[in-house]
Image (cartoon, rainbow, N blue to C red; front, side, top):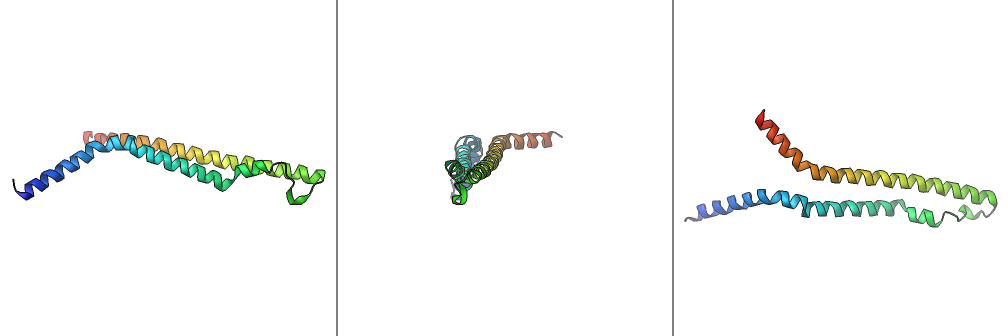
Amino acid sequence: MSLVLHSLRLVFLDVLGDFVFFPFWWYTIGFWQMFRKCWLSLLERQRDLAIDIWLKNLFVPMYGQHDFAGRVISFFMRLAQIVGRSLVLFIWLMMLLIFLGLWLLMPVGIVYKIIFNFSA
């Protein structure tokens, strides 16, 4: 067999192998990589929002004002910060879950569109 035919056969088998392997990669290794990236993104967002630090200092008076009014104002301001930051983190989590759901549905949608366009 000539070198050209041998090379074409290898390239064809490689492309065909990639085409067959793609769905397995997408739903196993690829999904795990995307899940891990989303998890790291969520941890980074939590670190940026620093909700744990706000919780730790919830009962510490702000600006060193130890009177009753200073303690009450500090408590409610920090509580508002914790609620707001938790809401932002929850919205970020929902966006990541939607992204992962779209990751799982994308190949199915593409195959559906290809079949729909060829049948029309």
